Length: 206
Image (cartoon, rainbow, N blue to C red):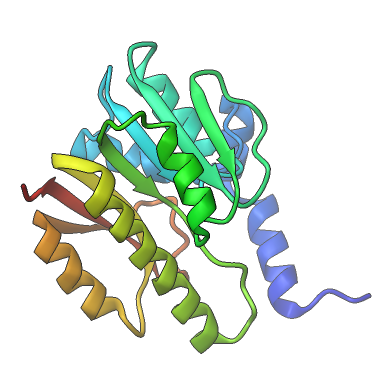
């Protein structure tokens, strides 16, 4: 079967992608690692000893970064619908974040403790229908924010990938209700043509 033009564009970008080559060299599972590394360099989110929830973690590059930076005294709790091979220092639950039973299994890992940081690079399976994909993406972001409201400690931070479009302004307003400060970040490893940006909620209100 012939590849579509967009598929060929992606393949060409991927093969020639500086960050793909860096990930292979540095041992990260995906180029997305450099998005988190760049944001962390600026905002100092990942510190030794903290507890981190990684939502939408597979294939695991953000968990790799987080585990390394929180060290042996810290904990990383990862969740994804897809399978994720073992990463030292990371507790992983495979399941659908939208299902209550999966969420209950995941939160049981926390042993009643609130986390210091929630990171979320989740995206829905793309259908190709822009309206449907945006709605699904915003739904995942809303679920992540609900998790944050229940399980992030006061003063904690939240980093989430959001696609600009329908529902974005309402989501930004909900973030501002929850955090003292809300910042936007577009790391260099984000492709220019992508509408993704990262919202960083700092200092969850008590």
